[in-house]
Image (cartoon, rainbow, N blue to C red; front, side, top):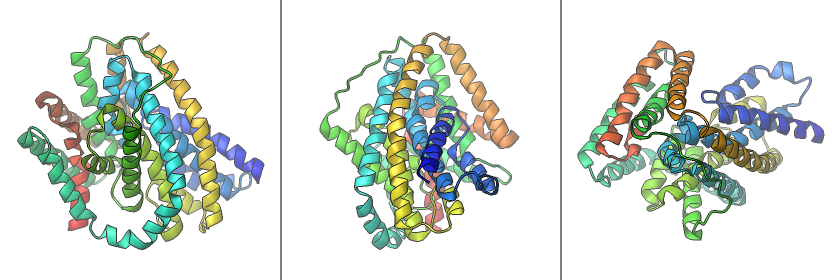
Length: 400
């Protein structure tokens, strides 16, 4: 059993590298493919080992996922808010610093989530139903506060309203699979790349800094904010990582780009680890990977959860080494290629992936979302207003 689990963890690490670095290939897709292949795999690998593969892959994915977001501007849905600050770091010659900040966030989140796991277990067990009943009102309060705190309130309201309307249409569009991919790629991916292409002449030489001066107060504030975001994502249906990040940003002020990148790195990791709580207590899954584990293992006891946490720590150790070394190679490579051509290639890749994953309807969504995503950069409004595409539909879901 021990050798089998170690082998599964190793395979999961390699799978996480692929899902983390290649835009459009997500752990949810691989996890669901595994569920359909359990009958074939079971003679060679036990169910517990297959679940450990998914755990390992998910953890590595959460550490490597920011790399394409920072260096290519091609984020997964969980990394959309990190595109702009990450790209700013890259254009200032500090892409590696941005990635290192997300790794610090992921590592801190891993340690804190496991330490606080018993506490969260208690909170979810006794407060889950009570908190769920008020999530709609909480989201409305966050939306109002988010708009009012912007310097250009009318523009902020307009962008939130139009992106929210887009979200309501797209998420209810019949026959459109993977609706978040084209919508978020347009709002936060291609729009950012187009603005960058227009304003920047190229990527400067990247500096590989090995030491970072992060005030302890900022680090703690960012990590606690990440815990809150991941906690909300893990326990509340319909609230994704990006939405939870927006909620945390309204509560936690003055993080700056450093703190924000730490927060961005921590959310996915916290979300995945704390999703194990709802799986254990209520047999409910909050993301594709945990859904797959639920399908593979009909009964999950405390011993299995402890094993999963141990696998998480092992995968996290491998992830730190992989993320930092891959980022160093990206930092050296990115300056040797034509920046303008790189952006055009990434835009082309996103268009192709959109067509493959969502068809012509997805392409139409991508175009409209890109047009909306450009507006905040032109009128100088906070880009988080674009999260109306998810926040408005989720708020209405809870209220109506």
